[in-house]
Length: 517
Image (cartoon, rainbow, N blue to C red; front, side):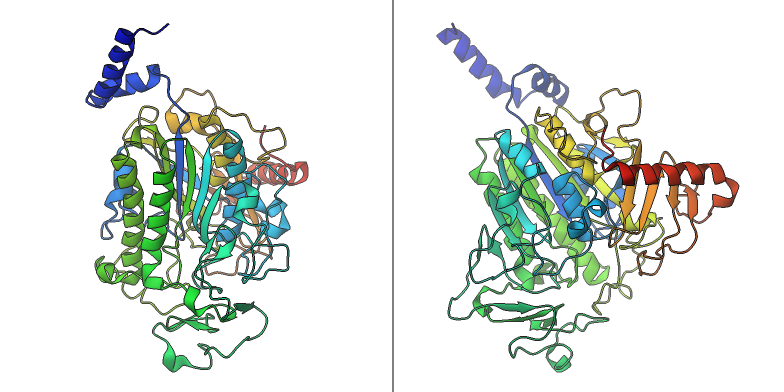
């Protein structure tokens, strides 16, 4: 039985732990019983490998993400599962390569049905079963409903049906209609007398479009993006109604950061999982007025710094609530960087020497490293050594198994078929072999794939590959990334045995239906 003296002694120890030197606090954290760690996963949109200070950006300033890197671990060979958004997000949520599931394997419209089967185990549902409060804030882009979507009624199935307790999100991307926020199952601020209509096939309503009314635009499209005008910016798809519910682009970043912080505040007394998917830096790139022109690298640089402010808002909230020491925070991106992505926003002309993907070849939508190699910083005081760097191969598809391990859970055998537990690499635990032996990546759709194993990367001949400049197509190409990170030298002709071995491995992974041991 605990005596009053023992209780007071323990309370004094707990109160004094915060004042201990960092090495003693680490020992305290390892020795003292604690609740399961909170998990905050911040996913940027279109941030490239060279866009952050901790990855070499010299002009754009990202002090908050850089702080996370200093206080935790920075990975140099982390990858999005896909070179575009929807399949990466699908793989993160399900632990399954999206190319195995056609519904989630390509960029979706704003009216597409839910691509995730609510019956399967997902990252949030697994953590929810472990006692976590689970929330998503920001970009969804994995479909909603069952093919009969009506934005004027309850919208389901959606995030709540795949494991989240709370959701504040927008359906697709900032450049796609409908331009509204949804909270749980309802559009926020919708006037029932002004119903929403959405179409990706033909114009609905009488709202002006960029194609018909270019004089009304405050931001001109460079290609496509010429349908319904919202806030002076023409989008992909047509929308009418819902005027009171439409977002203001200049306010989106702070609105979403506020919702992310509010979720943390509401759940500070229990373990929580927050998936914070920012709209930055996807087009249309619209910094808030105080941030406009501050980067010195044009609008794209401004919204990179706006993204960094969102990270800072979360880190500040964790500090204020004294939750930092019991929270695993990860910052990464859904695909590689891109400059001109459909709007004439000066991204190329005003870059001022900034290289979105640093030394890498290719851009978003490409099977080159510039399409999928991502920043990946993780902090977990007491578990992750500050200032660490890792060159281990990992992927965002691994988060299901990794978060389960962090929470002390074992995924069901059929869950996360392509998700490897990479926690040993995060926390620096000894392991006698790589946490991930190989990795398959994709572009937009299930047909164009590439495979990594060790330093070798094979991009097979694939006429269905990405159409962006820099994307691979035609004959197979082999690169040794240890010697040629910029993928300048195709050595397929010099190593036919490696080409065959990787081709056979890719075939095996495709046919087997899973890659996780």
